[in-house]
Length: 95
Image (tube, rainbow, N blue to C red):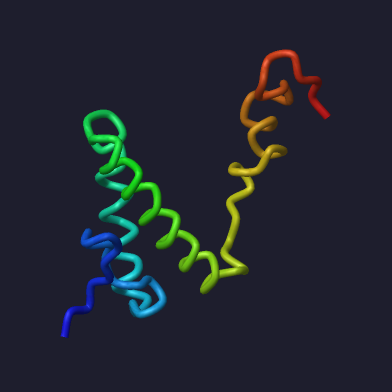
């Protein structure tokens, strides 16, 4: 049995909904690790496929983890605090 889905004859990978949590995390780690190289050196088709697959995997992870912990430093307020209360974007007043 072929666990990989296909579209227009091209392999698209296993449906993220069929992966267990450990497999999903491994797929996410792999796709994030290869992202930069694909962006810089991949063909348009490779980048399009990478974008689609990453969106599928990340969407599934977010669906499974709707209450994931958010680091305070990764919020707008936290970013402002890191730069001493100044706006993170030039020209934007700090609140």
